[in-house]
Amino acid sequence: MRSFLRSVPYIYYAYSVGFLGILLIIISVATDTGVLQSAGIALFAGAFVGAGFQYVTSSDLWKLQGNVEGVLSLLRDVSEQATSLSKDLRVARVAEREGIIAIFPSRDDEKFVGEVKEQVREASELWVQSITGADFFGSGKVFHQAMRQFIRRGGTLNALLLNPDSPDFEARRRMNQPDVEEKLKSILYIDHLQSMATLEEWKDAYGNRVKIALLESQPSCWVFRTSQIVLLQQYHNGYPDDRQEGDDFETYRKVSHHFPVLQFSSNSPHFTSISNHLVRTVEIQGRARRRSRTRR
Figure 1 (cartoon, rainbow, N blue to C red):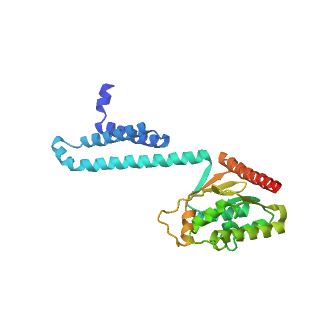
Figure 2: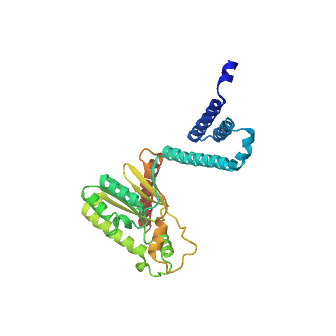
Figure 3: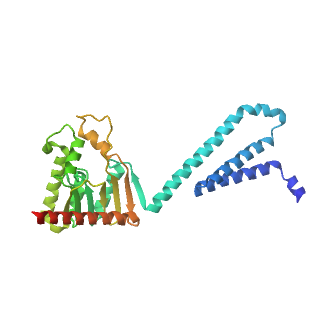
């Protein structure tokens, strides 16, 4: 056995060790194991150096000195790529576990717009939670025509919008346009009026297939839900610190919209949570309104 091992060319051992190192790196990326990744890189480096000694004599070692940094740089690149791939796979595994099937960079993204229009075309029931609902119900807005066709063909709509007479709406519209004192001239209020005009028109025409709930507090998220998916985007007040009075509303809108939108499948536990949240929000608002009328 020993004579056989001695008869195997040295370079084959180096190749075997190098192959094992590469295999360990691949396994470490797939399993997110840092120890295996380090061991794989070490074996690969050892095999690389060992293979070199098959052909390099002691008199040639000085000639290799200038290439050492290049070899180390290559190994660093391999390590960084493996780490990056490991992070990507970790994110992908979390997304799969949580039922996230897509992430869009913002509501202005072309693929997001296309996805919403496709979902509206295929849906029989829709839930929309928004501050003004302008994208869906404002005349000439991006989803208005698709929503009108949805209602005409027999769809059921539940719209949850922020009450324009609430303190939260007033605070939001002042933050959006701090230089506009008169509420009736603010774009947020005008958008809301247009949405309500559309919704009231549809409700008059289609009755209980159109349900409207006005929320007293600002919703934490923009939500679009069908029976198959939920799209969710966090609302935020994180506008740039250097925003000045007089900045145009379009600039604000882009900042507001530019936040990732998560798409959950109906198999996700979050789909059920968000669906229940919408239903209970409507119930809570209904009870609050009934109590308010009773007090009067």
